[in-house]
Amino acid sequence: MLSEELRSQVEKVDILIVGAGPAGMAAAIAAKEAGVDSIVVLEREEHMGGILRQCIHNGFGLHRFKEELTGPEYAQRDIDRVQELGIEVRCGTTVLSIDENRFVTAVSKEKGIQLFACGALILAMGCRERPRGALATPGTRCAGIYSAGTAQKYVNLEGYMPGKRVVILGSGDIGLIMARRMTLQGAKVLACVEIMPYSGGLNRNIVQCLDDFGIPLMLSHTVVDIHGKERLTGVTVARVDDKRNPIPGTEQHFDCDTLLLSVGLLPENELTQMAGVEMSAQTSGAVVDDALQTSAEGIFACGNVLHVHDLVDFVSAESMRAGKAAAEYVQGKNRAGRYAQVKDGNGVRGAVPQRILVPDGEAEPIQLMFRPANVYENSYIVIRDGENQILRQKKRILAPGEMVELTLKPEMIKAFSGADLTVSIEQ
Image (cartoon, rainbow, N blue to C red; front, side, top):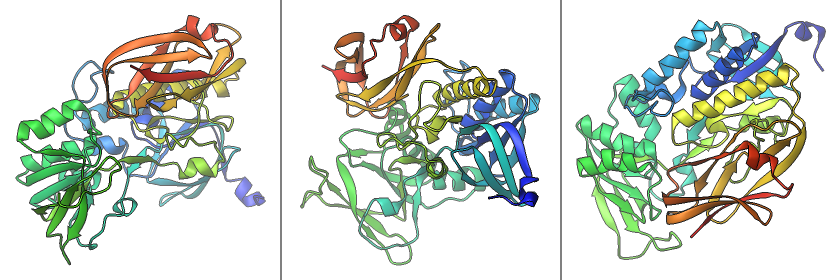
């Protein structure tokens, strides 16, 4: 129960957005353009832009802007638009808690404790890297072991080189990109080691960051020992079997002073869980409907806090849909209809959204995304409405490193029978 003094300090805002990375900025822009003026964006870092600030390589914006940009260039376009629209962004502000009633507590050095009552809340906190502690890799806790993103920040933003002889564990996109970056900065990248029989990154990054520099990609291998007392002196790598257990006799030693970890990303969902939102075990993000609204009314989620994307263009497109939906919510534009549940079938991991509204009135196209659970060649993506097949698309190749995006057309949505929708990959 708030005291009278604290109650007088509560700021009322139509839409509050947590995070000013690409997701938060896109959501804010869309909400403002949809006619909502009372918008506040909270960002814990001192600058807008999120992870894009340290991604100085190109390859961003091909889908959205139809040109190739670096990460900072991509971010700056949204920063400029946010400022042009006069959207209030409070950097250096950390959100401490949220609840199911959209009451938010935050703190900053300039303003101290801040309390917000929101008409709608958009969660856009992004994701973080999986740490070494989650890997259970044996060996000493010596210096020289970094997540790939931390190394990227040191090199690109702060001008520090983590080391000279490098092994990379995991083949996620950040790790692949850092293989190239470290090589260009004069380091020797000895190998990129991946426990799975396929890479977790985009194929273009494998070609441009490993193949072009002669860096070996060791699939079905992992680091089984870490050597060094104060500073890393080497790692032992071994092949793994089908159950990902090291195979005795396949050990290989690398003399190195740096080990970079690129072993997966985790949505930053501690605040989401505080609000009592239903979570998905498949995506580690919130369960949402096609408007990106969570199980808590008026709370929306988008971007990498919802599910980890491979392209920032997809983050922006999804977040703009969330911003528009949040604007319609505070404007009282109610959605009426019945819901169909979306389920993962064979070969599909983490389909989003998990619920689709079959509206009473006109339907709009719905974007559905998922990651393949394995590598598939010359296969079909199939969506069934109960026993009825409503979509069948052939794909030459499907891989876990690249998200699949499908468009459900209005006539397909209106024809739903009311049964669960199942998305599958079939040969």
